[in-house]
Length: 224
Image (cartoon, rainbow, N blue to C red; front, side, top):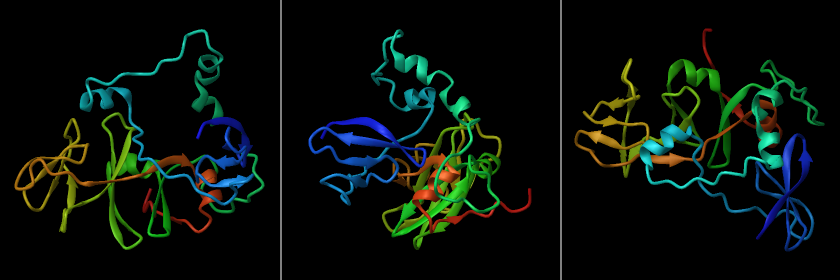
């Protein structure tokens, strides 16, 4: 299917497919109007990381760069900074103590959803938690903005992760004598070369995540 941007719903992009004219919600991948209403797109795993960190793992990458004179370049310049200053205009009432434009990290597992405030991960570097009956680990990149999430296990082996204080690049260790890098790969120890299970974490504004995950739980930041 071919898609184009068609509008905004609750400040979340809507896409229209050229084949049927159905409207699809960006964050959920669900068709909200048209012949395919109620259908859901298949999620493709994505990785939201800084280009420098990406190149370190994939040095031969090719990059799609828009022409410097396109409207997109002008529109996207400082887009995130400027957007964060705008008021939230949505029909859904977000009634809790977290500001609407708080950056959160969202995950869905086994029918459950949870949000972790970005500032909590920036403070802790590594968060190990539970969701949908499974253990999850959220890890911050060395740039302080890039994020990844893993299920800390290799086959049936649970890996209890700890961050090595002051390590650059960031290094995780476990109780079995393994060291793990930010890609989720064991670089030394009995499990050297093995990889943790990646999870599709989404960085989003709180109001957007809450709107489309009304039953979400929220990570407790603890003492500030």
